[in-house]
Length: 471
Image (cartoon, rainbow, N blue to C red; front, side, top):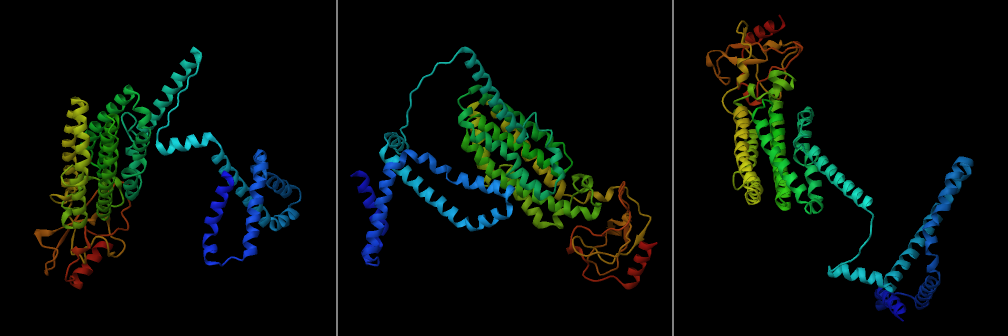
């Protein structure tokens, strides 16, 4: 009665709309009822052979495989013919499997207990077992080695001490890829894996202390390495290493929420900073050529706030956020980690707080070297032997005639004449040592298309410039 009642009620639910509105023919309705009853009767007497159902598609697949080897043409034709029947048989087998599973769930006490445990969240199980001493020793060794391998993989993936030496080599890729890698994907994968496995590690106090110690060393080491870099991308990379150390410290203290919170907030700030550095590098390449050693060198930058103001504004916001300035995002996540570190260990709290100050120092060092002051690239191998008037000066847009000598890539005005003056200024060519770079074709551009003069120079000065260039 139980199964028939369930069947009747489910059948009524399936056809309730048709029954109510009277759209189903009475004979068709009774015919469907008879089919359903027949299926239920068959399932009651054939459930012990249910293990055959998953094997039904296997002979067809095997015959197709051997047929393609032995009789390929006939098999291909047969496969086209039997495509629909095979799918139909598979669907019928699936229906029988679902019916059987429903009956097993309704008729088995084990499934009922599991369902109640799942719904009520009161699962409990008591068991015991006997093992020999050798097996217990091997279990301890294998478990310990497995956990250590998981920790080492997280350390290497997230550039933690001492497996952080690969990080500078990752700066060879394009800057948008660096933004994606260092913000949310590659180096953050180790932190995320450790967070997912935290319920396993939290039962091992020694492992948790080791994780927090590695995080503390990494956050301090990353900040000190970022202080000593001239490459803007390397500085941001070591900054990422330091911030990942904060996340590792939080996980070692058991602060799962604080670690993932800082993972998310740091991703947005660091992606903004890397994209801003890409804009800066792109702006420097017309001056120094395609050379990462020069276009990414902060010593040669400076005064870019006038020429790329949007990049300067976004870079400043990312810097303020990473430094932990309220009410920006990283302030809340880093503040929670620092407060938990003081409660966990005063030693870790002192190092984490001191490193937070170092973070603000090296981030504003990057910002001021890039956007503050003046363009320090002028003082590289200065030479004032060649003079000429320029036709136009721009950064991202216009090209000048081919054949421009690399000696004229860097330029300043003579006697402080403004670029926007209506007078014809004299330009001093400034030689720049390009090493092994070609001295052939170049773009004579300086930092912004906004620097294009409002009034063109005279044709005479333009001709004199071209004659000097092609000489």
